[in-house]
Every structure is written in structure tokens, then in C-alpha cells.
Length: 375
Image (cartoon, rainbow, N blue to C red; front, side):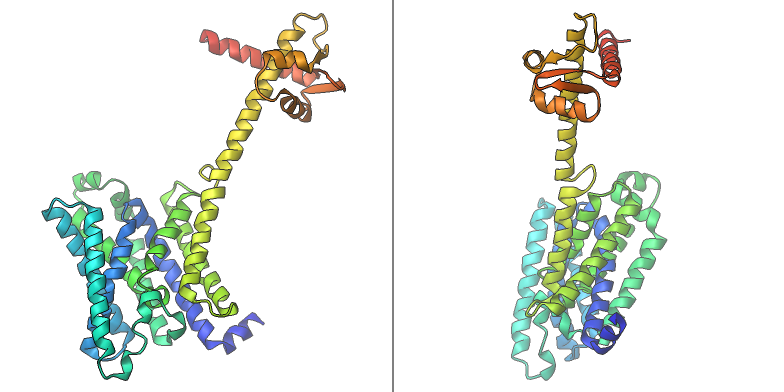
């Protein structure tokens, strides 16, 4: 049934294929952009590519996908060169250079688009869709072009994996080993330009930067291994593309590009909250568990101190007496100890050791004694 649905829905098939390709290419490269602290470079490239689209159209006077992609790629690449030149030859920092190039190139693109709107040509229709994306206007030729560029990106990542890995973590050490750091940096930036350019028609200039940042931001929460992070980032990217396309198809009046960005942003939020060892809620649960464990262990040691004054180590004590020398919610701690079968509660306010609890308390006391005396 699913195959038949896609077979008879040609537009959805094209858009789905484009979203799949975009998600993989942008997801794989986003890890390197985030690790190199160049996330905002994606925003600069996407805005800098806009005038290249307009110039390519003015030269060809037709919306040939390959020609527009090459125009956007050259323009975006020139924008990154200007950023590096500003930082290198002036006293301005990267954030100032990013702001300058982004605004200047985007403003130039808007001026050229306004001029194109006055040109008597039927081919000009749809160029403004590159601002916010228009996945529904994608053609089979667009998908083929995206697929070719995406294969180039994957091939170069595979061939230069070790070099890109070193470049992301320690470029100075890489330079001391004799690697051409500047050329490799230029190559990685060029691949990033390509990945952004192939997504402009689907996601648009304004939102494309999210596809460079969000997949890696989500993947980083789940792992500390670069290989796993790159694969997870690519997976989050393609999954966002597929889910966003399906949602925009079944929900009326919802654009595909913004929906893809919403889905990938949802993955980021979920990762920030629930990812093991880094998620906010995960850390809150872990901290709660540690605090509860400390309170419970403290209550066991206090009960052992009380038991030393009794001939029967399993003698029950009143909770009010244990609370007087303890800290925190004593009843909650005792309930937790009872759940772990360390204590028993024969009467309402009386608590005593089980055999297992008494052994646990002795072990804790011996451990504290060793820590206090250093042996």
C-alpha cells in the first residue's frame, strides 16, 4: 500500500527524495561545523549564496538547476573567503565578519531579485522561493543534481576522514605533522558550501542554517565519539527530512522546509532533555538518585550507631530519634531502604535492620573509617 501511494503521488516522491538527500548531506557535515565552532558559518553561506542564484539566472536567463547551484556555490564560497580575509587582515573578529558578509550579500541578493522581477521573462517565476524554500516546485532534475553533489560530499568525507578528524580537534598539532591545514580547511568549507547550496530550494536561505547546526547539536548530546556523532547527525538529518515531508503532505497549508526545521529542532529539544549523561532531565534524575542514596546510607549508619548501644543489633528504633541526628526527609529515606530490604517496619514508628541491612551498614561504616584515616 505504501509503495502504491508513492507511485501515484509523484510530487511527494520527488520531495521525499530531496529531503532524504538534504538530510544526509547536511547532517554529516554539520558535525564538523559544530565541532570547529563554525555553526554560524552555515548562516553566512546560505545568505551569501543568494546573490549567486540571481546572477546565474541573469547570465543564463533560465532556471537550469545545475547552473543555479553552481552560481550559489561560487557566491557562497566567495562569501567565506571574504570572512577569512576580514578576520586575517583587519582587527575584526569572526562574529563581526559573519554579520558584515551575511547582510551585504543578502542585501545584494534582494536587489538583484527586485531587478529580475522587472525583467520580461516567464522563467523568472519561482526565484523568490529560494528565500524560504519551496519543496513542491522541485523537479526530477533538481533531485538528480542534489544526489550528485551529495555523493561528492560523502566520497570526500570517506577519503579525508582522518584529516577532517584532526582538523576538527587539533589543527595546530595537525600543522606540526606537516599536513596542509589551510587547503584541508578550504576543502571542508567547500563541502559545507555544497551541502548548504543543495538545500536552498527545499529549506530556503533563511532556514538552511538550522540544518547545519541542529542535527549535530542533537547528536552531540548522545555520544562523545566522532564517528558515532557523524552517523547520528546524518540519521537525525534524514529522519527530519522524511518526517517533515510527510507531515507537510498530510497537514494542509504547511510548507515542507519550515516543517523539516521544526522536526529537527524537536530532535534537539528531546536530546537536550533526555540524552544519557548530558540531558537535563537525565541529570536531574541522576542527581535525585545520588541524593536519595546518600540520605539512605546516612540513615543506615545512624541506625548502626543506635544499635551499638543495644545487645540486639536488630532492635527497632523510633523514627523521631533517627531524624534527630539525620538530615533530609527521614521517612522517604526509610521507605527507600525498606524497598531495598535493608530495614523492616514492624510498627508505625519503629524501624529496625534486616540481616542484609545490618551487613550493609557495617560495610558503610568500615568504608567511612578507611576514608577518614586514609587507609
